[in-house]
Length: 285
Ligand SMILES: NC(=O)c1ccc[n+]([C@@H]2O[C@H](COP(=O)([O-])OP(=O)(O)OC[C@H]3O[C@@H](n4cnc5c(N)ncnc54)[C@H](OP(=O)(O)O)[C@@H]3O)[C@@H](O)[C@H]2O)c1
Image (tube, rainbow, N blue to C red; front, side, top):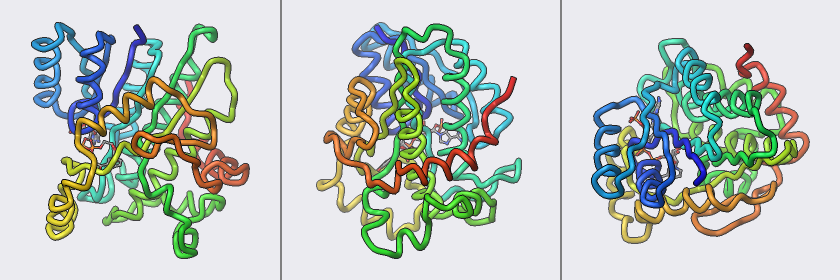
């Protein structure tokens, strides 16, 4: 059975995916900041499925912790890595290392971890699959000219600007971090490394803890729309589907459906701009 790493497996959609994979007897490792949440996931898996996930405590908003975490998981040679941890509207908007909090937690840490894992693979004949939790924002970013005017992934300067910390890290930074994850996924796919695949997935819109920093009115409307949004169970299943069924470059999962990615996500120009800026985050030995 494939061995699976799930960042952000202590809560919300990642937790749901962890429970589903544990039920199928996969050997899983979850990560998060909160050991109490992890204890609950572990106890559920033990009681229901006689399966004991491993927990690695880490704060992915801090580069120093990401380096430790990436080194540790790279040594484990997982078959599937679901890079799912994420935040929205964090307060404060800059980390104690003076980095942009949303970009660091959602995107930069995933870049660091994925590249460390690829660079320390010891068996190229063994499949390695990455899943990145992205958002519906990637689908609609260029639906009006305003989207690309706000952030154009083909511009090095736009990626650089997105990384500059400020006291407020709002929904715009969340959207950019999610576009970045789809571009990272595409970049890995298009690199055609032997037996390496990568797929991004919008798991569905679900009211979870990630929305706890949104203004109260927005939270109210999202809760009100619950009957029309995805259930937590379905969102977890969508993450698991993406883990089991890699898609070719140029596609991603919109909930349960393979869908075309907008070309601005994976055009040669976007990938060159993205890699040119993010290369600095590769963990060197
Ligand atoms: N909910 C939605 O509607 C929706 C829609 C599209 C995409 N997504 C994406 O799906 C992913 C999961 O979201 P969710 O809704 O399940 O949110 P959630 O319930 O808040 O779960 C987030 C997970 O990420 C972990 N995490 C957050 N900050 C972290 C940090 N600094 N270091 C390490 N781990 C951290 C949390 O663990 P601890 O609390 O233990 O730190 C938790 O396990 C996110 O990437 C999100 O952007 C969600």
